[in-house]
Length: 262
Ligand code: NDP
Image (cartoon, rainbow, N blue to C red; front, side, top):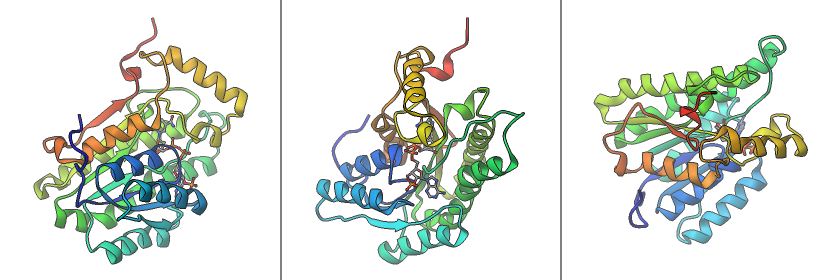
């Protein structure tokens, strides 16, 4: 898929949620491919640790780190402002940050619903809106991190599924809106990927171990995914190798989207 080590060389990229999991793996993959980075997250220690690893890969390029809570509008604004101030332009926006909470139609509170939708959809909408003028200028692109839960329906994670279906529709609509400006917009739709997401969403160590074990059955390839596998798909979509791909929602899920119970 990738050839050479400088596929993203000269590109300025914002990656949200770079302090953990898929976002952190994407920061490292983008560094390996030569990109210049603005990394955002809330936990500043984790963010700085990822930035240091990026610096180890490309010593000339210490990423800009921006501590920001994406549910705070002024923080979201600051992400674009600080990136433009530091680098002057923007080529790639990776909307990766997200949260998961469990709950069904009988027991999901509106507070939970708001938290999930504000983080996974509203903040992504806002950041994209603010980044768009710069992406038009650079004929850049956007990669959203959605989920197999956007493409397929699962019980027990209702608000999360709704939020990711919204991300997929957002991806397609914005792709059409910006196509005449040569700005591409795509999503990756991961299956279960080994990160902090499910534990932060309420699974304790035992429940998480059982969940990963069950992933051997729920994913055709017989295992959950690793963040690096999602990062490679994000890097592909963000690169010129994907120059004729827009409005796509690409499963990176070991075949889970294609499965039906039988
Ligand atoms: P992690 O929990 O490991 O990482 C989530 C990241 O999002 C962290 O960097 C976190 O920052 C950031 N984040 C969350 N809320 C906010 C907020 N309000 N403001 C700023 N940053 C925030 O999870 P993943 O790496 O797994 O998740 C990344 C994306 O992948 C999410 O959109 C998720 O829905 C999606 N995904 C994950 C799957 C999985 O199985 N892991 C499957 C399908 C999709 P900090 O830690 O600094 O607070």
